[in-house]
Length: 211
Ligand code: 5GP
Image (cartoon, rainbow, N blue to C red; front, top):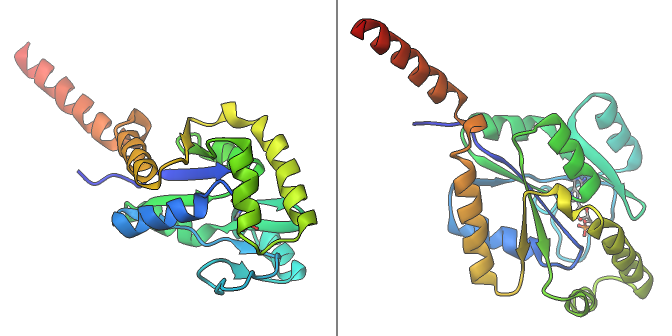
């Protein structure tokens, strides 16, 4: 039976290892489509236009908001980030499980608009490990690292809004866990409305026939 894809939101502190996790998940299974966000942040070394992000100026971002071209958007450490709408809707309709790797304000907006979305929060095993990973990346200044750690303190307040937490300790295990959780979400009633309706109808017809 073909079903509509699941909209999966993945959040987690900067440096929790979401990016690596997502790349592994998409490489290993073919039911996933990873959304590419639009941002006003400058590219980091090695990031590619249209693959890592669509890098735009503020006025282009604001124009896209005005045209209702984004599923959600948020401001994070001084920059805009948003999810382009059209691609996400096409992929869901084609039955793909669409992953949005976004921060918490955006995640909560998605939950309001799409109550059936599955919200996952990736956590580091310890706070010290988070700081170590952020520093080891070597692409951000001390000030940026501090601002991201402060943001992590704020984001930690909202974790209970998510459906599941995933502790990013061992990569293999984490990828398998995430795939299993998303797989289970396919069996939720909200994602099988057509099947449930058609079975109800058939059941009604059968019961009438028996009388
Ligand atoms: P980074 O600058 O490290 O690539 O991303 C900073 C934060 O923005 C991360 O928490 C990331 O998940 C989030 N983010 C990336 N794209 C989007 C988006 O389209 N919408 C929202 N709300 N957050 C995003």
